[in-house]
Image (cartoon, rainbow, N blue to C red; front, side, top):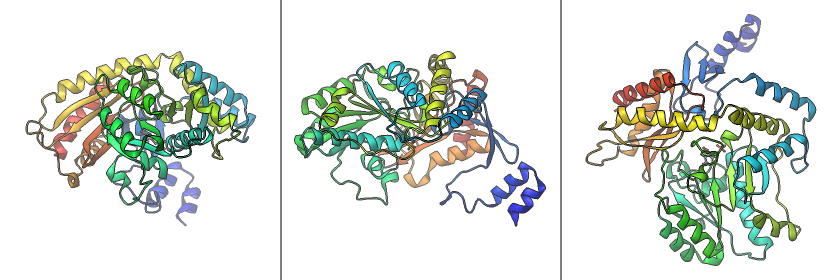
Length: 439
Ligand code: PLP
């Protein structure tokens, strides 16, 4: 009845009103904050009731070229007519172009092989299977464990949840691959000890984000951490999987997050910024040394039906082209510094802010009950969510990062790289007002 009234009425506003009235049916389990969005443009979300929300979180640190670029839509329309669906392992023009772009222009030279999925979690899951298959094909049947860090976030498929180290997100799903150990995010010696304790010949891989993202508000490890991690992995024959789903494709002001520390990975995982939100796509990238034993044994990996979907591949190439043509990675670095300066100035001695941290346009603000006494908010207070709700009430979307026993209360900024100085001013003003209102 409501639907037909809306259609008869003929306006999208009426449809939107109907959809809002249906919010008890979507999403399947309602979350704490949600707005009905009817349009996105530039760096803004437009809601059914006409509000313009500044997208300071870039959704979930996804949008990099901004919303609503007509040239990307045109590429998508053409691609859909040219190739609608072809099995993921078969080459197509769009796939071949994207493989060349990503491997030749974005990955370190040692990374020479690519596969595509439809998102970050699927890519992490695929990387785990790739690592295990690598050892299996080489005759090392017992190397199946994957070590993760705490805190960390790698996705919501069962395997990516299992390597992740965020208690709140794992809660309710335990036991999750009980053999997957976790080590503190910043302690390379603990990794060495964990590999030995698990049994060196049982460990397939170690997975880590260059900067710990959504579980912890952009934690950056000390200089020297990554060199040591590489040494430990090499010494024990453990593959190093670098999860660039959040940090990749310019977000941190470099092309990939691993460039900040010259990390030499065996496998890289990406998603989000690869298509900047325009299409569901993620990727798994690896060295010849990872893939060769699998091919030599005549083994392969199963694919996802929508892996490397052709329109998504064409769209991702268009987004990467725009990032380059408009020099947007450099802009992520300069606007990231500009945001950092504003946050430091506004929050440098705020009693409820322990730290502003991160790189480029991936910045986290760590919220505490008492900065001087180093006292955290009680977990059940959910302060980071209240800050996000207050910001949304002031028409700015800030990304709610986390809270938990092993994770700080933190919020994150991750706008499109095209963000203006005036928008940075607004983001910081609103965050300050929202912290004061929420605490
Ligand atoms: N890995 C990292 C580092 C992430 O930040 C995320 C998402 O936030 C994922 C994996 C999961 O990606 P997706 O949500 O696209 O499945």
